[in-house]
Length: 557
Image (cartoon, rainbow, N blue to C red; front, side):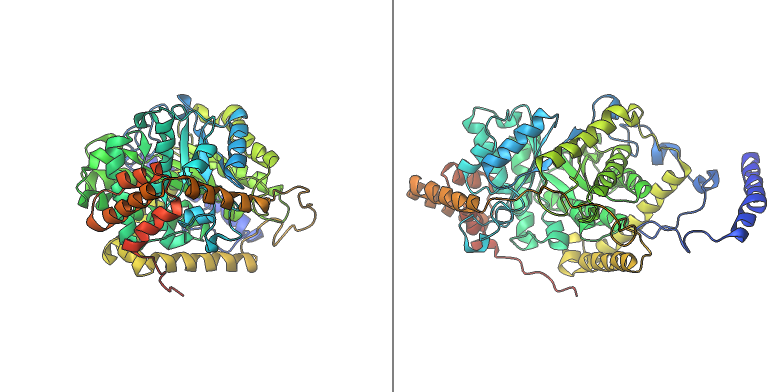
């Protein structure tokens, strides 16, 4: 044993005999077992022995270098702060546009669009299944007219736009591009991201339309098209956020997100794309939950895992293909309707974990989101939370400030190991698509969610204001309510578009979308032509439904 190791072992033994053991005799510790959400045991204290096999160069290294554990840029936040991208959209395109303008005036640095459920599910606002849902959880977008209103006055060649849309991502991207085209903005000048991650919809969220293999075809068509035509657009944001919101552990979120990423890369390669032609435009989206150090470690482990997978499994040569760039959002599932002011503290801790974990972009939830869509004042407070962390805490002044912590490095390694165990099982199924079709990921998440809820109900896990410390806290006096008349106005707008367009041109364009879905042509050009012909989102979705069909979920109970 080296001399330094002997000294540490001797000091540890001395501490245990003189301090720890007498303390334990005087009283028990708070819990029978200290563990993270992923079941990783938390030791009382960590020391160099916990990093005995740690290889600094290959496991940690320096910022902006493989394996990117410490961040994807050499200067990280010393060069540029993360993008403050508050997610918003509700009521109508006009109201949402006003909220976007307000947020930019208050210092937001990126646009993030929330769409209502009918838009996410490929239904126009006047469809019977859309009744009562129009504008409720996001903005309704049915046609080019809605998209032009949504983006009115926003400089598309200067802002970065993120659109949280999946099953209809191809149509929303087409709408965005045609608006830019009509304004004279070249497609090579627009910058942004479509979520476009349908696999996690089958696993955790449910806003799917087509079966997995049809969805994968649309996604790879987007990859191929955007690589040539929209070079600065991130064609997918592979999302662990909703996996965690559904009840997964941190390790499951990490593993299942990366498994989905592997599936998208495999599909793109089978479609004939070269790895270094598209991989640099892949991005990720993670949740930031309550276990502070586990969340920091999760982000560091994610970058390291993805870099090694891209290099070793997919033989990527370009370092940009190995960089995991990600957006993070604080955990909506941790917000409580009781004592809503507590949510400000929760969001602040989660946002700090995202920054210490090296996120490129961040959304902070508003305190009233457990009750309704956020009010303007609560959104402003959420944005100010990011600005306070950025400009008053000094945590962004050095890169990866928790790097080298015995605890954080050990936790980063342990999370990586647990994720690799899940990835091995998913490979045994034949990959993420096959695992989803068999219900594997869904069952794992359901089991984790059940355990978490049981811990709350038995008070093994304390939620302040919910199962303990329940006194005090008044409900907010103001919550945002979407006006019912907006739905009727939106329906009238859809009818007006159909009445005023050239019907023959629209029908021919829809026929070309259906034909392309059937014969293997890239779907993006005919979808863009359909948008130019004033076809609606629901009509374009239905043209593809005729070929791909609709997905029926696997029973996993």
